[in-house]
Length: 397
Image (cartoon, rainbow, N blue to C red; front, side):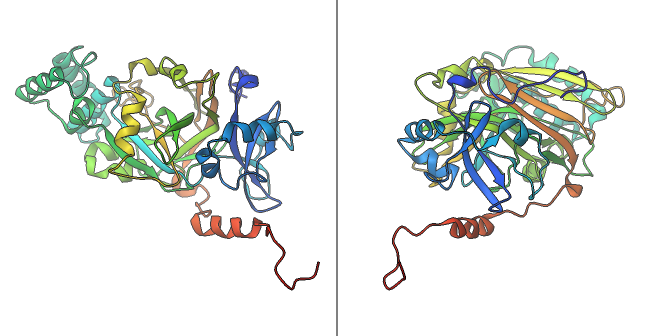
């Protein structure tokens, strides 16, 4: 429930027609289970698949989901969504597991310009207002219609260099190659209802609401969900070489609530004109709302995926790909001209009508529970859950 008494549903508006896959923490087995949404509950997919990545690799994934979804729900969705994120309580996890978490940056002109501003001010938010005015006056609206890698982009590059405004962010924004980086380690992403982490030392940071594509090892896009690519603007603004420090911290990748599988009723084209909305409610009464129309993305989903996987790089367990955001808040929160930054306790809701709502709360990264369920623990968990298919020779019947 929000501060104003309204509520944002976890599920898509057309959830009854959607095939939704997720993961939950089950305290009875001290580990995760892969689940599918069925009505107001979720059903266990463990008999068919041990990991979400394994399911996403299967050609018959839709049939598997449909067969299991006919069973009675085992867990209440409302209880899972409202549960505390403790190992003794069943709760929602990020809906991916062994997939690599990748991200594309600077895929919208609006956020690209903000990255140029961050670079110009060296991560100092107090200088951002004046520099923003200068950059916008110089660029005008000339970049909004430029296709990355085109002859027009090359000409724009020449003009901007002459004006002393060329930047590494403009290079990946309108140049031939998109920015692709690793957002977070495998298994480190948090899910619906969790806290996202901002390091104590950061004084200029923000959420980045994004569409996340779920891609099989073959490069086939199999589903989509929502993500919060938490970013430290003061750190990245000091140097682009600090991208890892700005992007990858404790609980800095949030994904969910569920992966909506692509099927006959939900094709990739349904996402091209979708809108992702953001709502922030602070404990201090601060409120902010914004929207990112995916129609304004500068590169197609297929182009971003092709830049990530192919003969040049493989992902045997698939990957989740943040596709970028146009959200770069400039609304002052604390001091005039200082822009927006998070406060602990901020509730962040990222929504899209056909994907549902990802809800998280901002915390100080150093004070949040440490990430402990990594690959070694996952392997031990899978081994403990394994049921022998054959009785060993000589064993008692």
